[in-house]
Length: 139
Image 1 (cartoon, helix red, strand yellow):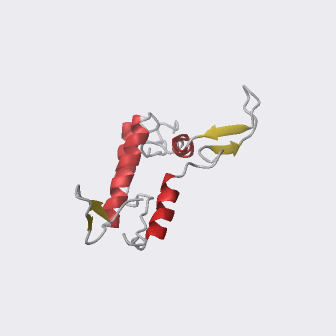
Image 2 (cartoon, one colour):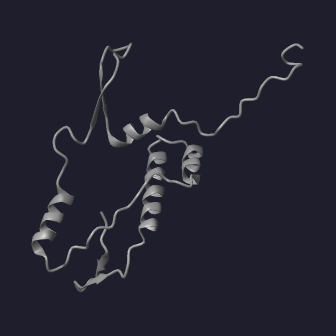
Image 3 (tube, one colour):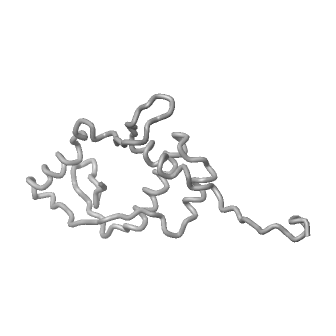
C-alpha cells in the first residue's frame, strides 16, 4: 500500500495530482526481483530475463483515496496495514509426496521460498533443439 501524497514536517498533507500505477508496478517489480536476487533465490541472469519480459506479471490497483478527515476509515486502514499475520499465515504450508530422506509430507515456505519453488524450473534462457544432420545420423 502506498500513499497518494506526502506529509510535510509542519504536518500538512500534500496530495499527489495523480498516481502513475504503471510506474508503481514497475518499481515494485524491480524491488521484488532485486530482493529475490539478494536472498540468492534468483540468479542475476534470470532476474535480468524476468525484467526483460514485456508482460511483467504484476499489477497495481489504485482505489479511492481516504480523506484526511475520515478518521474512522483512516483508523481501519491503519489497523489493516499494521496487523501481524494470523498464526500460521506468515508461512505457506504445502502437502507433498513423502520426502525420500525424511518421509515428511509437509513443506513450510516463507513467501520468498514459495516464489523460488514455483519459478525454479523456468530456465534462464531458451535453448534451441536442432535436428541432427544426415551426416550425424550416419547417412
